[in-house]
Image (cartoon, rainbow, N blue to C red; front, side, top):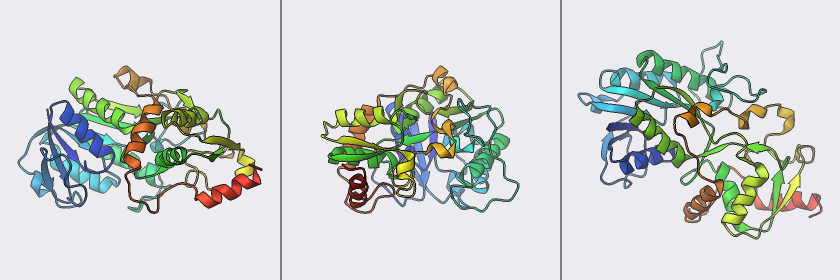
Length: 327
């Protein structure tokens, strides 16, 4: 197949390009050419700005486009309109954040999504991220009716994950010693390795599939503790976990920012990590052991320059909190 990838240089898009190339598809990348221009030397690159400068795409034909970096409906609609006669299938990477009610478990593709009563600003904030993605999905479906694939991932992890959510735990386990672990040990987690998602998206296109899919690991794959212990085993770390309750951590630590993936019970959002993925599994989604993701992410992360990270707990603050736990 001839596949156009919008983006393709950083995290998810990079793994999608890699998966497509490995499966012998002819890939074209369209981006601004501002990062990682030395990756995939054999892949065609077209440079432009998807927000208004799509002229370089004119006169070309592809079997599919994969949009890995669409956040604002106006911009996504522009891309879709330009490509509607040039592309057979539009794949849009959305998010489980489109769902409106995480107080319920087993959220599937037919669960209600967030609808805003107001016009949303083009800003990526926690409050409007999901509703904006809903509008992006709608734009794709309107322009590509019956020939779209909407992928709603959970939390995406793996090499090149500069969000530092999962990467924080990888780096912290690798460092070893006493680790502050948040909440209940048996709290469920659902993550997906970007490489697994990328391989599956290419497989969907090869099948000629269309429709909307949740994309994360199956429910009950592992708990928070099992995730961390898999990392300890995989990295052969001497780390020792010290669990602190929600009540103890309240007011001391920012959930998700300082201790990624910790969601206090008081939020009453069990749906975040109990998403129904039956449809994706029926269409061939396969997820690797989280230990493997730990190992491979560490191989990448240990080569990163030292400096400020996007998420994670300051080392001295962790020591201070552990002291209050009498560690």
